[in-house]
Image 1 (tube, rainbow, N blue to C red):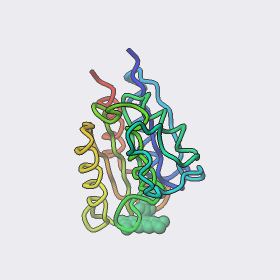
Image 2: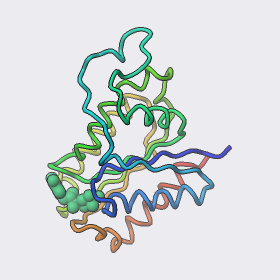
Image 3: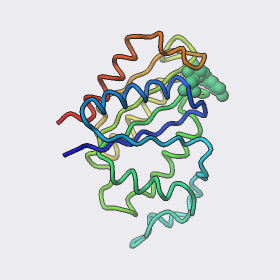
Length: 188
Ligand SMILES: Cc1cc2nc3c(=O)[nH]c(=O)nc-3n(C[C@H](O)[C@H](O)[C@H](O)COP(=O)(O)O)c2cc1C
C-alpha cells in the first residue's frame, strides 16, 4: 500500500535550511513511492493551547479552538509518517513548531491511539557550529521524549549547522542523510 507522509514545516523561511532538509526527506520518501503532503505552519491561523482541557474530557469531539489546526488533525491521523522540520530558535524548536506540538495534545479526541506506530522523522538546522551549544540537542531530546511517550517510533533525526537560508545545501553529508531518512521512513 502507498504510504502517506505529512511534512510539517516549522520555519518562517519558505526557502530556509530546515525546509531544504525536509525537501530532501520528501525526495527520499517519494523515491520509495510514498505520497507526501507538506504543511507550512507559519502564516496559518494556529493559536496556542489554552489548557481548557476540553479535549481530555470523556466523549470529547476534539479541540475547542476553531482554527487551521482542525484540518491538520485530520491529516495527521490519515498519515503513516510525520516529518517535523524546525530551525533552532533560542536553544530549542521554533515557536511555530512548539505551538503545533502542544496542540497535538488534542489528537486522541479525534481517533483512538492516534500516535501509536506513526513513524517520525526530524530535521533541524542551527546557526552555531555545535549541536549541543546551539540548543539543537535540547529540541531533539524534547522530540525523543514526546514521541517516546506517544509510542511513535523515530526513524531518524537529521541536523546540521547553517546560518543563512540555503547554506545547508553545501553540507552534502546531511543532505544525503536526509534523503536516506525519507527512504527509511516509508520502507517496510
Ligand atoms: C529568532 C532566531 C533565534 C535563533 N536562535 C538560535 C539559537 O538559539 N541557536 C542557534 O544555533 N541558532 C539560532 N538561530 C539561527 C537559526 O537556527 C539558523 O539560521 C537556522 O539554519 C535557520 O533555519 P531555517 O532557515 O530553516 O529557518 C536563530 C535564528 C533566529 C531568527
